[in-house]
Image: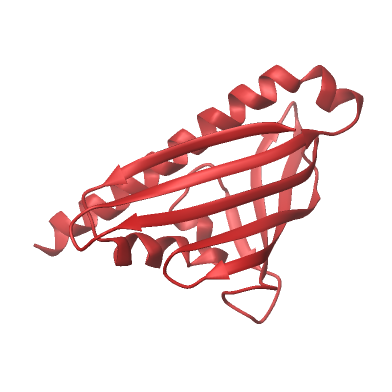
Length: 154
């Protein structure tokens, strides 16, 4: 199984960082690598919540991923699994965790997946590099959103 593990430290409270991550159906508003996202369930948060994310095309092919939350600890962490995707991956699982205090927080991401099919195996290295790049960029997007929001509110 391939692994992507990253984190980012933010100059904002744990509560504010969690508020952004917990907005599961609106990931496209805080993660620029997602073109559009929406919930596929009436449920907004917690175990059983499912979202669909449209991703940038790869080699001219539309990419998407559907994810279902399997573990949820309010204010702390959640885990989701990939239930359907056009990407060349299978058995994907991601855990997002927030720690910190009133002035600083850290978001941790742990993603594990297996390449799917011949294309996935052929693209193994490229997939790993792209996942790392996208997660790093997404965490930076969240950092910029939260830290600039604080400056705008001041």
